[in-house]
Image (tube, rainbow, N blue to C red; front, side, top):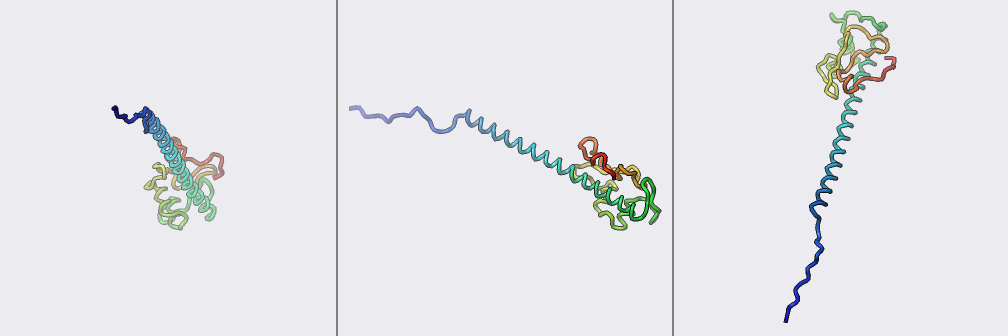
Length: 149
């Protein structure tokens, strides 16, 4: 008598190498999109932080200019042996220590650029900023044109 051998199934359970490769490729693609989106978000946040710093300093400069009756394009009176507007504003509490350090060039913007000012002792004319970011040309760290600053 012959004994019955167990039947073998031709269907195997599990994934093939091709299926696993496709799943891994899809996961890698989704991860890459996630990292690119996070990088773009960080660059946008850095740009916004830089512009807000420049805006705060510009508002402080205009407030100081208006409070003490200086004209745009004019120079402040010498106080403490200097006519540097940033030194005057810092001494009188118009700007914080961090903003003062940024104006002096020892503090960088959020994107890694440095703040620059062309004339530290002259109030800028209307439409020009007191400080600019070194990344304004490459990373668009600049305020909108046409604002009456």
